[in-house]
Length: 332
Image (cartoon, rainbow, N blue to C red):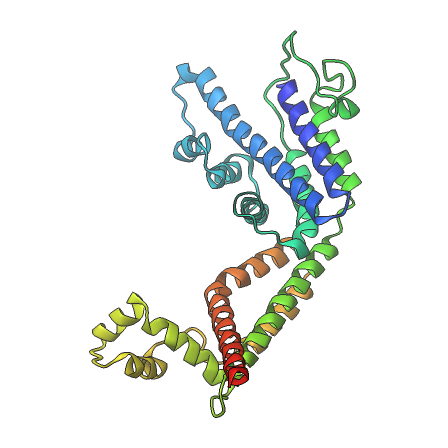
């Protein structure tokens, strides 16, 4: 168990080194290392409980959360977080933050998304969250094998001896030392998230202007109408739109379907959403709790993903058609 704790401390120390470099590339490494450290301990919590139950199997005692424990012992990160809530009293706020930041780790590592403008702030936040939670972890025992070797980075915290002379207090103290060293400022996280939301909003404010402006003379329309128009055109080509038409008894061609959907379909966005989005961004900027700010930011990102994709595609199509019109005019 000492070697396990030392390996976790080694990863956290390496994560802190990368994060402190201040650039986005090192922040990416720091985020991944912090995420791996917390996942290792979350899994160990489940293993500890399983071992405890096996040790006292003669009493036929079972965990009141046996199904959650069984799932936590598998590969699901969410299941490990859920069990930590049940068995260790992890707060809902902390569990939600860890789950959200784990998803960012997956996007950075597996999907290749960069999140450059917020990645450093998120890596600092995740590091602070990880150290805070790990401070509370208490292993069941401190075992050490004669052939094991203390990782070099862990020696800064555990000492050069192969044993932890400070006993059970060394691990939480090490986590606390690193948490203090990272100098996490909650306000920086809140500002970074609010700035990113402002950037996203401005991008789509511009997209709506492009869409509403049209390509040819006479196509310019209002922003509210443009928002409904592009949703109707997209929906008309989907199975969802066609199915809605059949259910409502619509019988017409594609162009008629577009106009009918504009009047009939219960679109989520029936007018320009930018003013309401800016109000949400201002609300996020006013938050003092980074957990709440991250939760609100992520809710916005998830709730607006589809419409933002529609805005992007429609604005790109308008720009492309304008370029083609210019080229045709020059050809003449």
